[in-house]
Image (cartoon, rainbow, N blue to C red):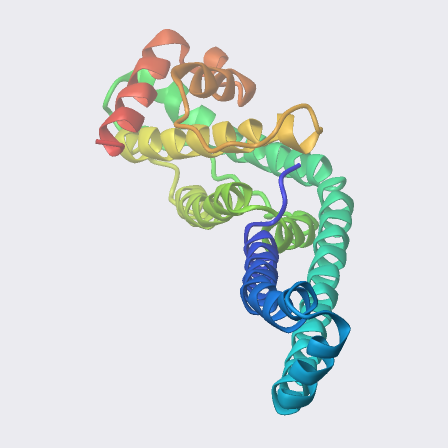
Length: 264
């Protein structure tokens, strides 16, 4: 699992500051040590060195103070770097704990989407049998949106890297839109608007594809990376929601056309 972006960035910043302190200390101390210690000893011995130190007492006092300040600054940055490392490790442990509930949350959403798909089966079947004629059908109560998944999603979004956060956020956004559409269709008088039904079906298939895409990462099988969904993802989601029995290849082609048109 890769480290969280912002914490890693802060750690790199602290390490860079320590490198600057080390470089500055080296640039100051190297000529000072040579001029104050090496050169006096090699050109006059102990007596010459004592005379040099006596003549440059103020400089020596200043260098001691400066060196003490640099050491204190180095220690401060080292402590800060250690704290950032501890925070990063703690954040990773929290994310692992949060991610352990993600498969359950995704399964809960899948069950909800399957119930939503049942609302769309009947108008699709009626359209296949009766064509564009609006034939009244029975009303069905829309499924209640689950709530347990929200905590797992919220924690994963706040603790995970940006790719997974964006993916889960996108699922939540599309979920609210799809939920409103399914409720609106379920509350109609039973007449079939096939264009609206197909569009709702496409949105539901797309949402299920996004949910399924996150499963491998949630189970710890692979690192999560945002990639454009391929046809196989939509095909699997289409079959998983049971639309292959409701409309066959005709419906799948319609759904694929709607999704491809919306992405242009």
